[in-house]
Length: 411
Image (cartoon, rainbow, N blue to C red; front, top):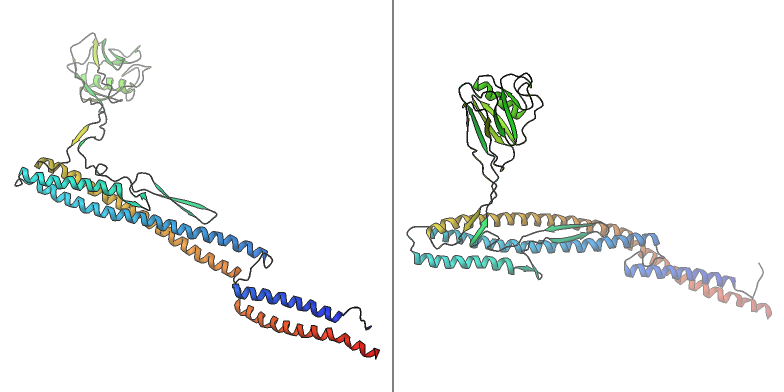
């Protein structure tokens, strides 16, 4: 190898190695001081992307747990308020029971009613003034609680309903009772003696049934007249229902079931019932009267109604107190039901919060496995690169002085 004074190759090599060592030493010190293996994208680009995604999940889940806990707090405020409402209603039960007693005077009932009115007012005040974080607790509008892991979203809606004395049924005035359905009308035709005669008719809902002695040549809705009241009754029922008989023998051919009535024969009676309640159409007898048909009046017809019930909600008299006691007991049941609904929502939110907390724990562990520095290994590297740095500096010094020996050749 030629001895050159133009370049100090040994020095250049020593500088390169020293630069590498110092870079590694710097990265080691950064890891040791930050506790993180990845401090820039250059350290581990893929690992950094995964870790940042996991961190976003953790952040969203942590806030979701707070959202769920906020919902639990609001519902617990509502439950506490309802517990007080229950106490007030229990006092109202006591007052109503006392006022209903015959030994209480009207003057005393006035004092009882004053306290009862105050209870109603306080229930309404609790329902309208109770709030959580400035938001009314008792409202018919559902409160939506947003939960997310940064990728998938879930909304849990909780409802407490509006709370006033009126919504609990404790109000003075009238209210609409449960609707009563229409009752179908019935009508009975009774056949006497030998039953209806030939050419005698019965009209039901626009359909005319004609009795005739012979089945031969029977037309639509013709009914065979046999001279036996019971058999004639059965034949008429078969014609009305268009079933059970033999067309052309018991009743006429080409008929159809009556669109408005159905019929049942019992002995010599035929009872017809409306298919559509509330129409109130009566059947009539016509044609050549034999005098053997008795037409009963249309009976049982009741139109659909919606009754109005008057409620006093007062303890001013003994009877009022008895009536109001039923309202108070109904209110107690409503409050108990509402507290049960709120309790179920609290349990659901707490379960969601527990799941979220577990997710945060597991994701944090996963992120730590990617990002966190292995401290024992980092300390070992620190010792290694510190020694290499010192020896590199010493080698560089030796390399810089080595070429000075060339001067001895010039002496």
